[in-house]
Amino acid sequence: MTLPAPAPVSSTGRIFFGINAASAWLGLAVSLVLTVFAVYPNTETVTTIVGFNQPGLAGLPGRVFDYMGYFTQLSNLVVAIVMTLLWRNSARTSRLFAVLRLDSLIMITVTGLVFAIVLAPNADLVGWQYVSNSLLHYITPPLTVLVFILFGPRGMVRPRNVLPALILPVAWIGFALVRGAVIGAYPYGFIDVAVHGYGTVMVNIAGIFVLGVLIGLLFCGIEALMRRASSRH
Image 1 (cartoon, rainbow, N blue to C red):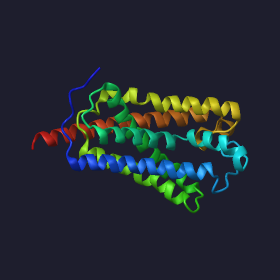
Image 2 (image 1 turned 90 degrees about the horizontal axis):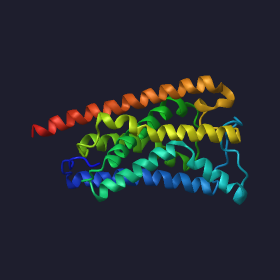
Image 3 (image 1 turned 60 degrees about the horizontal axis):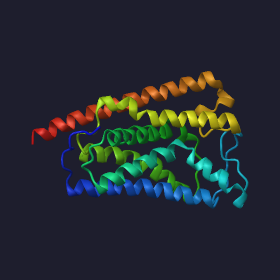
């Protein structure tokens, strides 16, 4: 299914699509390098949180798999891919891409908010972790929102795409819970079933799901306002 062609994007907008993509890719790359080479030893003390891997090559698969299992990495990856595609061609009309565009906005916003409110107070960072953490949690999330507000492209973000855009985050939650049940460890404390039990974790997940819906609708509202404003010019 295709959508009407979005409004043309200026050359400045295309530049910012590229900057947005570069920010997400760089954050992922720095974080991956630190993970692969185990530059900073794991300081986690809760045994039911992922991160307990052997040093050196023996622990490399576990470290990389843990890295890939964080919602932060997934949300930044979606942003990186979507913004790269928009940088290459902003006149995309497929329904799937429109869903992914909204996906990128919802997921990176949840990442930024959850980290700032829930995870940041307990974050124990050193050295280059400040660089990767800043890119992944403090720079890319607001930059992605700002680029959307200023440059769109208009016409992609619609209310009917909100629920489809939540399929990917829900799939991640399912993966994290299944993997956690197998290995006895979870990527984040608020979904740590071993500590909180399924009841509390499901309440936490429901709250985040509702947050995702509200954020999606908020972006739809912003989109409508920006389209109305642009039609006056």
